[in-house]
Image (tube, rainbow, N blue to C red; front, side, top):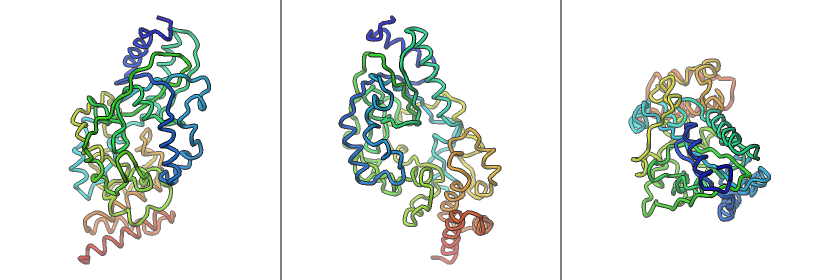
Length: 356
């Protein structure tokens, strides 16, 4: 059982991973030549926008051994996040008075939880085989996590560029354990999107420019989370009431009829974020933002971007004197970013009130 090339040892690792709470696990090699070419082409087209870290590592991202020397295998894990207790996402999107938060971000931040579990998994393996080289990743390093997960058999990369599992949909997080153990590898997953292209027209901003090709510069998740500055005016109306991330391409994916509710109670909604009114959220002070979103993935964007995003959603909301009052209260905000977006939103509200 201590032979790392043994299928029995690979099975033991998978058993240990499931005991640590992961919903699926697979083992991949480190060969990503085809994915490296697609990455470099995507970067050359500028589709990463201001995600400068993507370009900074370039091809190294597709070469695990260049990031952690000695790596020969990647243990890839999946953790489901769909919160069964959350309100209906379609109802929230249809109500312009509410703020829509991507379902993955309604509760506890997954980064630390998954990192800790992966490290404990590494400790479990060390207890069976002795010291070995490894490094844990959960959205924290230059990793092509979806191609690696595909190669580990955890699903295929869909036309929306998210990973899809035939029996679990796409509402899950991924994590990786790079290792120097020559473990047996699993067969890669095959593509089952077929002729379906429901995700392409579902994208509010047209960010899925072709099957399997995403222009991050137009993606609402990029605009509301990663972009530090001004949201382009032409993309504000399509954002609608989405204030942190976007799920539309996944919501229409037929494979998500198989999505499994998470077993993690920490991923259930906090502070009513699945059905909270925009004016209420816009009124949070910086201190309230920090306190209420402690331990949430939303907290990392900061109060300024939070207000920026909500201002856009308020501009898109139905005409309402209460919305105008909320925006007016932020019209002289110390942040030029907030002032500009609040001013735009006020203009939109006044235009609607005038019948424009």
